[in-house]
Length: 88
Image 1 (cartoon, rainbow, N blue to C red):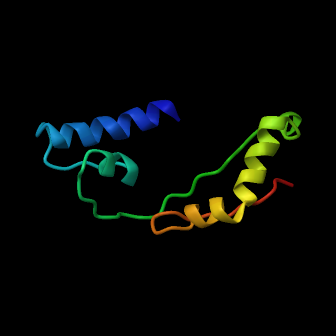
Image 2: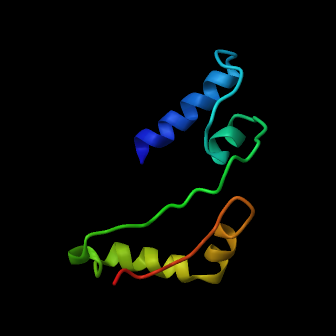
């Protein structure tokens, strides 16, 4: 994920520095550089972990956070879609 985030920031930076006239990047990268956006499509992201790590404390804390109404409301803002499903 870190590499992808750096690539999105690199696209936004290239537009700001006038090395590119436009680029495709995530909303947060564009907004962090003060750029306008034209949404292309919704993106689906999954939280995937190996079954043998599912009960670890950090994973359980993250799952609890995602079930918190304030956290899910934040993720449900325009530009976000939030669905929590447990793997079978």
